[in-house]
Amino acid sequence: QVQLVQSGAEVKKPGASVKVSCKASGYTIINYDFNWVRQATGQGLEWMGWMNPDSKNAGFAQKFQGRVSMSMNTSTSTAYMELHSLRSEDTAVYYCTRAVRFQLLSDSWGQGTLVTVSS
Amino acid sequence: EFVLTQSPGTLSLSPGERATLSCRASQSVRYNYLAWYQQKPGQPPRLLIYGASIRPTGIPDRFSGSGSGTDFILTITRLEPEDFAVYYCHHYDGSPRTFGQGTKVEIK
Image (cartoon, rainbow over all chains, first blue to last red; front, side, top):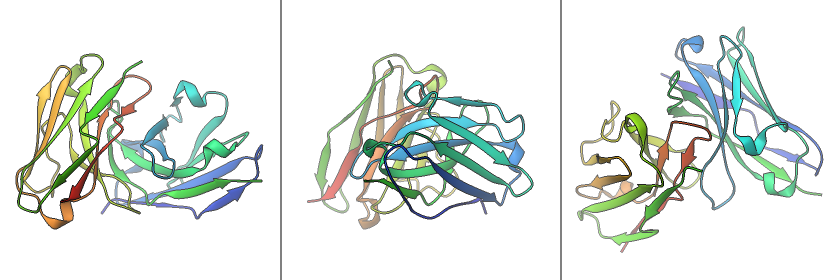
């Protein structure tokens, strides 16, 4: 079955960077894209961007342009999302999802990674 | 900017009752690229409906989606205890992909 297993919780200081990993299994990795979505505590869902693990092409929501990067290690089927210049408002649970190619419909989700930004 | 507005914010119902959740888009949704997710506390969202009305394998048939253009509905015909959760609509076209703010279905 499809599984997306994310790295553990992180605590970071303002201005630092965080890198979250997402190990995929149970399907052919290069046939789907990845989305990254975040959710602040008690709040709604916010789409951050997508990445094609085959071409390594990526696209980001304008809000995160210049502050987010996404990468992929196809040999280990692991996707990464790195967010830079962290601020307190970035405190949230970050999810990776499997995304249907072109539509970017998220049909399976990782368990989430809590990132806390605090001085 | 593409905005999805869900109503009501909270729906208080009893098990066995019918739930009707609304999602209104600020612009017409192309190709019916409108999905619904269910989220329970401490869990990631689960895909319930995509293409406005298509249920993925394994989703019970008490969940149904309808609508087109700018107005979409998620209906739960008979609420089961496990259905009390937050529901989000999602437009998966354009950039950024957008989510509604959610409707909480709570036990009355």
